[in-house]
Image 1 (cartoon, rainbow over the protein chains, first blue to last red):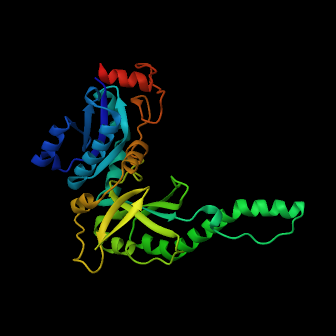
Image 2 (cartoon, chains in turn green, orange; image 1 turned 180 degrees about the vertical axis):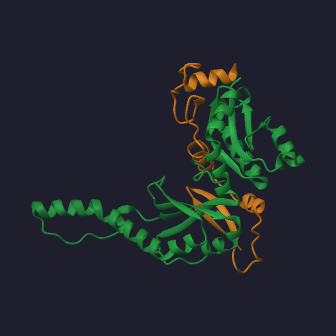
Length: 228
Length: 86
């Protein structure tokens, strides 16, 4: 029977708690102790459908993270059988343990800058001669000016605020924006004990142009920092 | 008063402003307060996390054709769906 691996967790005794036992039972999840880890998996035949299970998966990993450090595995990762899983864990045990240690007591937040203004309204173009060269320059300016304008806004924002965010976070990664109106996106790894310092910063007034807004989401289990 | 911030068209975490009682930074409470869209969840769940590579793996979500070692077989998303039904 193939299995779907959900997470690799620190084996800190939390899985003896009734609340976790109930959670695992409710979702037909199984566990296996291996190399100081608790592996949480499901028999692949019990997966209902990908979308439903994917959302359940996040809820389960989030719930697990209340009690232990959970290393989420990209969903769905199907393995041939338990021996295939244990073999893989044995080979990667050091990296898994190191990652679990690094992510213990941490969550991630996504921060992004969104531009609510249409791109072609961002900046007026200078008057240029109506010669062929002038037209060409104007075309290129129209093409690049919004990009330069956005980069300038992002650079000014990062110069002013990134040190403040970084001061209260362990690590951060810049992400490729998922939508065209997002001009900057990054994910921050934050110690839970630093949240009282980090979250109020997000509620302050940022020195941004009127059409640019900072948005954030979190806390999340450390999906972006779980790569081995 | 609550501040709601939109991310990818959906409301996300709301936190009390300064004129309301001090916010709680208890992790389960923060998770419960978090309001995230399906797209955000799927983006993380399907694209992030530990990616297991090697002979043991059968499939990941974003690769329709999956490489298996000699013990296994080449499969596809449709085959995967069928295997779930069987």
